[in-house]
Amino acid sequence: MTLTPEQIRNWKHYALNSPLYRRLTDVIADDPRLCDVLNSIEDRTRHNLLYAGVQYLMMRDGPGDLGRFYPNFTERPSDLEGIGGPFTDFVLASSAELIALGNSRLTQTNECRRCVALLPGIWETPASSFHLVDVGASAGLNLYLDRYQYRWGSQVWGPPSPVVLETENRGRPVAPREIEVMSRIGLDLNPLDPSDADDRRWLEALIWPEHDERRRRLRAALDLASAGSADVVAGEALETLGPTLGSLPPGESVVVLNAFTLNQFAPDDRSRVGDIVDGARADRPVFRVSMEWLTKDTDAAVVAVDDGTGLREVGLAHPHGEWIEF
Image (cartoon, rainbow, N blue to C red; front, side, top):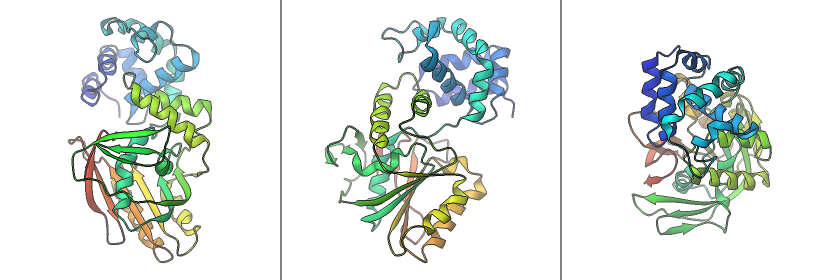
């Protein structure tokens, strides 16, 4: 789908917490050459992919003159009114590589703070000792949710950890209990290696320039995951989930996570995850925790669990884990 300049400009309402990306969206909409570059990226998340591609190249090759506008490249960013020329020059000079990046890379999970909602979701099930399977794992950060320290307001849980996840709790207190993760398996169309410099660069490039806290958290989580032992299975999740569940020891419990994954599926395919989980229950207890933002007119993701009786909503959460309400 080719976006008109007005449709391109309308993306700004998704970037309320990034003044830089809001300004760049206007710059693109006002220049037919930049519109052509953006429209050459086929994925519907083309804005994110183009902006991430720019940051990726700046991180890899040096920020150049454009870097003086980015708060993650300089302590004193220049006024955004002057960014149009340097951004246009950068994109046009690198257009072939930016289009190639946009059509080969994905907007993949880089926010482990979603675990502030996923872990309480697990506590809503009977699971205590289980194999953990993450559908759409990216670099596997959610698979280490038991190794992070959490602060839900005044409530603290978890081991001493380089990754501390803080959130505002707008609902009832969470009900912590000890869990044992027996194995960790991620499923992803394009698995990323948390120890690979290029994969780390791409995940960091996806973080918006103003989000320093998220950037620091990502680096710490990638370091932790690099020392871990998760297995990641490459391929379409609807093809790999069933065999993965079937490969686990019969009788042993499994928790399946999906967080901001179903929005990438065709609507008719979203229910198939539940069908696959249901089919695996013949040989073992399988529980599911879902955190999805499928309704774009709300600022909340729905957290739901399935303990064998179907998905039921248990709470809401900010898409990046800034708050939860159970």
